Length: 192
Image (cartoon, rainbow, N blue to C red; front, side, top):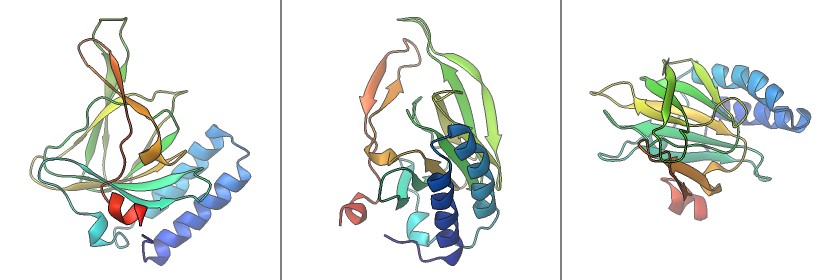
């Protein structure tokens, strides 16, 4: 599953050094990690086509790198025209860097039991921009492709092996949560 790109390999090395020396500081991982990810997504010449393929119905989540100690993972999200996620959380810190196209992320807060989720606002991401999520600062959102007529691709870095972590989707009307594990769109390749 290695991504054959010196630019991506430089990114993984830089992020590994950051994780090695951050002492578990989420603030440092997000602040310095934002700069490292911004550098990667400022260039659109490194992602192999096999990790940029949309599905006609569902967004795709391709694992690009999993740290051997599962301290972080790197994923490409590929959005077909008009596709979006359900409202969900991550349970770990994360960075989202826009590579191609655009995304709209709507943040939410849980309502009282049986009450609707509360929207906390929208963030639009464009190529080169980076956003973050964290249980400490806000971890619940719904993401959609910013375009109805083209594919968008973002690169995500998470504080764990995100395809193996139990997370939650939320009912927007009742705030009820349901546990899920996302896996990866390239699961056969990952498991091999």
